[in-house]
Length: 81
Image 1 (tube, rainbow, N blue to C red):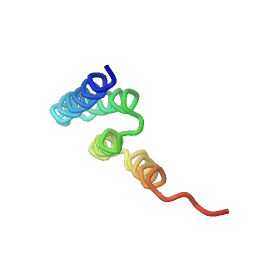
Image 2 (image 1 turned 180 degrees about the vertical axis):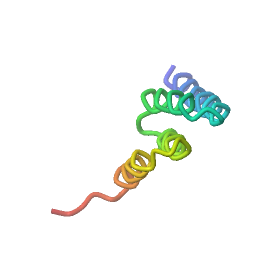
Image 3 (image 1 turned 135 degrees about the horizontal axis):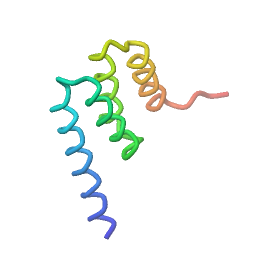
Image 4 (image 1 turned 90 degrees about the vertical axis):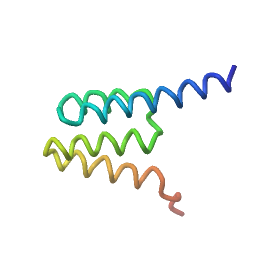
């Protein structure tokens, strides 16, 4: 069952990314689709990057930059204290 669930999740992420890409002509619609994709797949670098691109396309460079920085922070090695 775990394999099926994983396959379904992977497929859904691809579907959402495709829907968002189709919506890129309407930045607000793309943001809604990609934001939902991030809610469904919060650890997905692809989902976050797509949302950042949608914000950039809408002219919201501050949010785009913040999301991209968050992606870098998520994937950075832990700092020694």
